[in-house]
Length: 268
Image 1 (spheres, rainbow, N blue to C red):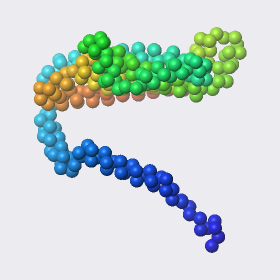
Image 2 (cartoon, helix red, strand yellow):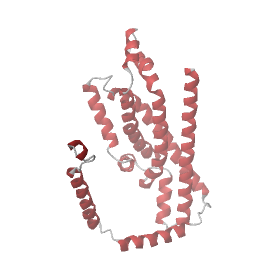
Image 3 (tube, rainbow, N blue to C red):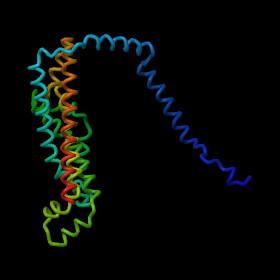
Image 4 (cartoon, helix red, strand yellow):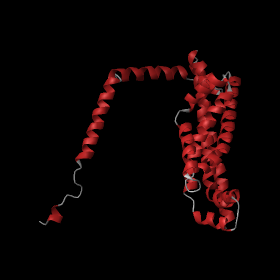
């Protein structure tokens, strides 16, 4: 038998195996530190079943409070998304390394990284301490989160464009802003729209959480209901939040579909 025939198709990589063994050992070690046991898991299942039983059937009698919280959450999400996207557009341009020099891109990317470093709830706590309780703190917190997410995606989308179209616009003697409007934005507008609709959907979810720390929205009412052990009303709010997220997803898909259809018609 030749050496080629005897050669193993998939030779064992002991470094990979050692890595998997180290990961398994760490999981066992971390589990022991967290005191995770089968008995506690079974007790938790029983407590969870009793908790769900107390949530059913949902109580929609206080629908005014529910509607007020949902309306405020939607308002927070829309305003934060609009502000965050408007601010993210110039930030994404400044962070694009194929359009800007390093002394501009590095500070801008540092700003984006700072905005993405913390969860919106943590940022909301900071703004609640600085501004006070209410929707304004939630809007500010979600605006920061939007800048971190949308700014990064905008910059990456701009870095993937074809520079041939940009150079063609520059060759006409166009100004920098005309180069951006006619050479850059047409190539990334579709992706920008997709990022924006996803950011709105994300802010709808996050707007229900920041209220837990006093930043407005339905989260405050949800937290208060938990503290009162008013679990049937909690279930009603959770179902309403789920429907709100589904509605936002449907609207976002419709907007994207309309834009795709218009783009296809314009190309034809």
